[in-house]
Amino acid sequence: TLVYALCFLHSIAQERRKFGAMGFCVPYEFNDGDLNACLTFLERHLFQSALSWPTLQYMVAEVQYGGKITDNFDRRLFRTYCDTWLTANTCRPGFQFRPKETLQRVRDDFAYGLPAGDSFEDYAALARSFPEIDSPEIFGLHPNADLACRMHQVDTLLHTILETQPKNAGGGGGGKTREEVVADKCRETLAALPADYQTGDDDQFAVLDPTVPLNVFLTQEIQRLQLVIDKVRSELQIILQAIRGEVVITSELLEAIDNLYDARVPHAWIYSPSGDEISWLAPTAGLWLAGLAARDKQLRTWSDNLVASKTRPRSYWFPGFFNPAGFLTAVQQEVTRLHANDGRSWALDGVKIHAEVTEFDRVDQLRASPSTEGVYIDGLFLDGAAWDRSGPGGSLDEAQPKALFSSMPIIFITAVTKSAPPPVPQAGASGSGTSATAKPGTPSAGHGRAAASSGVASDLG
Image (cartoon, rainbow, N blue to C red):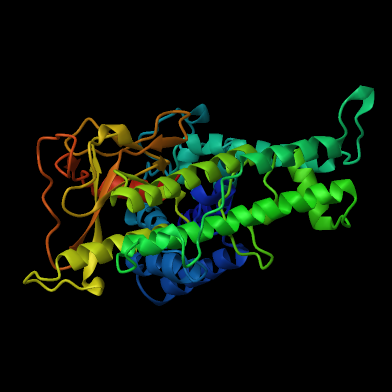
């Protein structure tokens, strides 16, 4: 039975990789050597002493497989598997590896349990009777994970088909040639690019107080965005010159022309020559350019209002930042400075981020930015779960069928000392200040295990 349980765990770890980032945060090369090491340890452990379940769980989750795991969430996931499947209940009659309750019916109501007999033939017969397509809930995932996996497979197939298409097809029948279509797209994109920012020493941003952390963060974001704008404009101009025959077409330019013709994002727009990510990922060039316009609008509006009237946005579009962690650090710095004269010890290394989910779904529902300290952020999505607004304060809930992502309400972000209790949310939402915030409901231990195995994450949409 224990050998079968370890083999089942190994197969789950192998098959879970097909779900991509929802399966594991980092892809790992688990192989038969890991399983053989676990079986060898189990054999020696049983010969030398009585079975110790905590020892077996630790060796499997933290040593044999855990030795390859580098992400803490993946380690927590594997620990959850071992705490559930490598216990005394595993050897009891009627044990099943599948959840007791499933959101969708498992094919043929297959139990994923243990055979009635103890012989090798009994276990082999049970393994041969497995459904050809396993439900994602066997892995601890939401049924929507299978939909996401199939969509990824379809995208890969279509991408492969596009890559195998002929690249030199002309415009037969009087239509535009491939080069003419790309040239029109380049000219259209150049006309739609945002205007350059004035980032010199004598520009309008020089009047901003450089001692304010969020002002420094704004300047850094503008500089990063200006580099992206310069890169895109330069690439488009070089492509036009290559189409006109003024420069030699390299393999990189040919790839960029192919990407623009297929409405995909050129590699040079996202990555630097050294391979570093300089912008954001998007499935199509249109969505990437829409993201560029949205980021430019946020930064330009923020800077213009700050220079003209010393006002800040009511809420910040968090996914629109190049360095979201830097934004949170700047908020921590500002809150720490506000409490510099307090009796308590407020230092940057002595505070932590505190987040509260509000009841507001849209920025226009906010009348103003937080009146005292902290900021509002928006634009976050949940992957693998949904936010239930029915209970007091709200809590995590199962995702709706066929809804891969669920939008989060606006979140209030501030900083508190590590030694102090979290602020108590104020009652009576008024639509201004921080009185509309509510502390999220704390999930139970069962919900914690479910979230660990289902790959729940908050995405920067």
